[in-house]
Length: 308
Image (cartoon, rainbow, N blue to C red; front, side, top):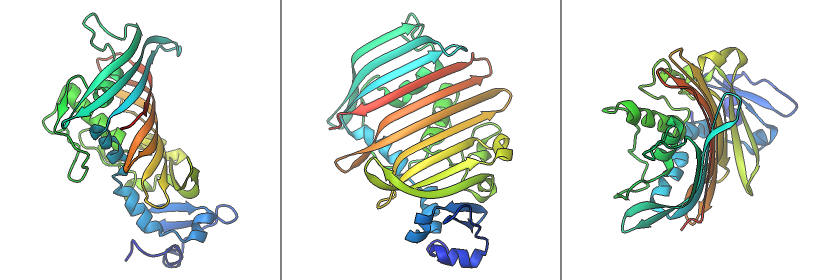
């Protein structure tokens, strides 16, 4: 029952509501202080159930897994910058994924590379480019995949080196806000919905129209005095009012562990094709440094379209 109490019941039992601005209300759920816009209060959104859904959401990850079973085209733009913000290596390409007889493969329709993006053997010179390729490029045919997310868990078990780093990146990329095991010094700081981390954030729920759909907007921002103790600095997610599917998400993550540091901003926009929710735009800006590796400053944009 605690997850299905309407807002006014939550307010009655907590007794901790505090007005932020005219019409806004703050409620306490566990250790989460959440500011509700006036329209959310008027609509009597079931806030505890909504927060529980956010914690267990699979629609964001599902949208990316849907790419495994569809045909689509993509425009890929990757830029590696120097310390002055000038491009020192770039890649611009147009690719097409073709799925047939339970297998998928990728065709490169156009490609222009500059600088030292590739080495003499046409391998990627940059870790950022390797990561992008592992997420969005298919070198050979891949068969037997599906878009099922139930029971699919990311794990670094048995992985090392690049493969382990790829898995950790996918955890941060597809499940921001979930605890990530195997990340030195920070694994317990990524679970931003857990009570022991949630009280380090200011949270709010609003409502607006996004790309023609009515959405709930959930925002978490690290408190000014807690920024050094968190990994997710800020995350804003647009949830479809009717289905609670994630229609867009912006997030910023950063951490400095001495032996490595990173600062990354991500923007993901979804679209619907037939019965499938799929990403249509992914933007990334990242600055990271790992021990024994040179600092990389990368920007990439993936635009996906022509789904079939």
